[in-house]
Length: 615
Ligand SMILES: Nc1ncnc2c1ncn2[C@@H]1O[C@H](COP(=O)(O)OP(=O)(O)OP(=O)(O)O)[C@@H](O)[C@H]1O
Image 1 (cartoon, rainbow, N blue to C red):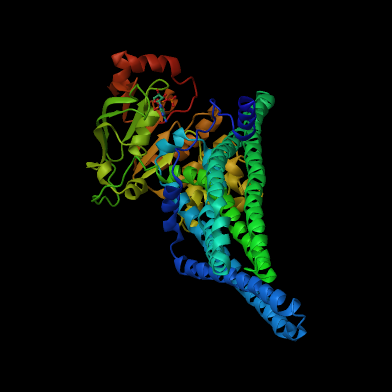
Image 2 (spheres, helix red, strand yellow):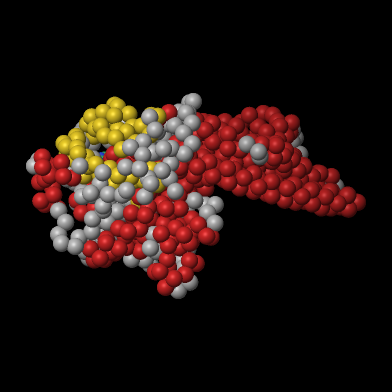
């Protein structure tokens, strides 16, 4: 029988663990530690917290005064039938109600302000922190889950810290005031009434653990739901083209159901908690009622006294019950707290130098010196002892088969990662000794996958230099050969390009990216597969703008087809993360090794676009 009840309870109150998680659970953290971590975010609002505490303390005192007034009504007005007291008592009741209204208003407004301030600071700090994390972090995380943490979880943390705290103070004061009055009225009965307090405590502890488990699961599932939604909606064309809607819906539904199960478990736990607490309370009230009646019969207590006692007792139980319920809320909110703390505990792998050197505008001397690098959590190094150098103004092409490490080299030059061994230098200074901001001010990129933001064409070009003048924007667009198509857009430079620039063609997006790099006017330029994904015509179309962009800058062209690099000043051939060959196009062809092989495979057909040497 016991086993049956146990298994039924388990099914009712526990959530099954998902071993195939889309998003992993955050590491567990104790309640006081969660509180300690978030307390600093109340800065600027702490003075007001004192006020909230004061309001919370006055409320229960007024409540107690109302109950005490009731004792006077029964003992001095109703029992002796004395109507003369009615007016002062009515005045006192009205006065107390008004007073409590004023304090309740003050409390609501102040705590609302403090809570919103807290959210404002926390959300902004979390956003700034996450934005500053290294690329490696984002490459391993699901974007949707991060979104769900920055939005949903942060709100829940507020419940934990501020609303919860002010309620706890309110209930705590109620408890102290009522307990004091009860002791004053009848200490022996009060002690008896407190016999059940440990039962409350025990029930609260058991339930809060269950609640926390269910809440952790619910928040984790919410993160998974956001992650899947973001992935599917972000790739909706792929999903529809491959008819994967049902499969994706199945994946979504699994998480959605998981969230439902977790939410229901938490509802059942809360629903069971209420009656359990009622039962404990009733046991206490019955004990007191029995003994109170006995005391009344013995003449130790007046009728008004007993009624006030019972009234106060029910008020005493209510904060105890509320405190235990609040305990559940705390545990449930701390599940969200853990998810935020996990984010805050991430540190950028790329750290700023303690005493950075000054670069100013670089000449553009780029050097890789015996650079080795492995991505975190991978066994195979992506680069092994890679060395090459590009003098100011030179065009260096990095070529090689897919996975050879070309884009990795670009990421190291932008210092998205630091090498495990060797050094990347610009003008002879190790990138690790430079201020990150200064380094990136000196490097402009045109990437394989062009990044365009939702905004106007003008905003997208000026992203490269927010203080650019209208004339500079126009000049950049013209140099990027984007002026013409922009002129044909419905609202010219004010046309919204849609999220990720979906309203533009691939070639147009690429020309926009060239204009953006142009306006940045950095001495070092990285072109990562700038013509990939473009047809021969569009590819040819961007060559001229690219040439203009490259003029006078040290350019690293990364390409795995050789169409774009044939006549670069120098060519480095990477293979499995090593430099296989190094030289000019003609030298490498004459060498008849890796480059010659690649060239035979990917060499330009007649009329295919080619980047030529820039003088
Ligand atoms: N974020 C990452 N985490 C772990 N491994 C990675 C990551 N990015 C790339 N790699 C691995 O590092 C190696 C080099 O990748 P890289 O992107 O530099 O190649 P690539 O030469 O640019 O290839 P492609 O021409 O296909 O773009 C590959 O084996 C790849 O699987």
